Length: 145
Image 1 (cartoon, rainbow, N blue to C red):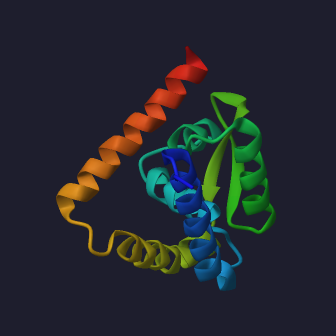
Image 2 (cartoon, rainbow, N blue to C red):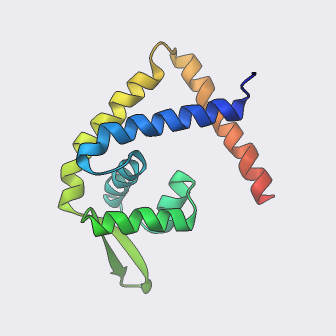
C-alpha cells in the first residue's frame, strides 16, 4: 500500500505525541501542554498573553485551547487574571510551578527534536519546514476561503 502525505503526517504526529507524552509523564503534562506552558512563559515576559494568542500560535480551536488552559489552571500551572482595560479579557499568568517545570520541559522538547532531526541535513530540514508550512497554508486556505 502506498502511503500518501496525509498518512505519513498522521504517523509522524502520532509517534511524536507518544514520545513527548512518555518523556513528560512524570511532570504530569502532555507534549502539547508543555509547549503551551513554555509559550506562555516566554511571551509573558513581553506583556499579557491571552487565550487567542495560544490559539493562533498552535493552530488550535477555541474549545481545544479552553480545555488545555482549564486543566493547566486546575493543576496550578497558570492563573487567569482580569485585565484592567477590559474585565472580560483574562491574561494567562504562569505560576512558580510553571517556571520550575520549564527547564525540564524544554530539555525534553530539545531531546526529542534532536531525535526527530537525526541524520537530516540543515538544508533538508529547512526544505521540510517550508513544505510543511505550505501544506498547512494549503489546508488553511481551503478552510478559510
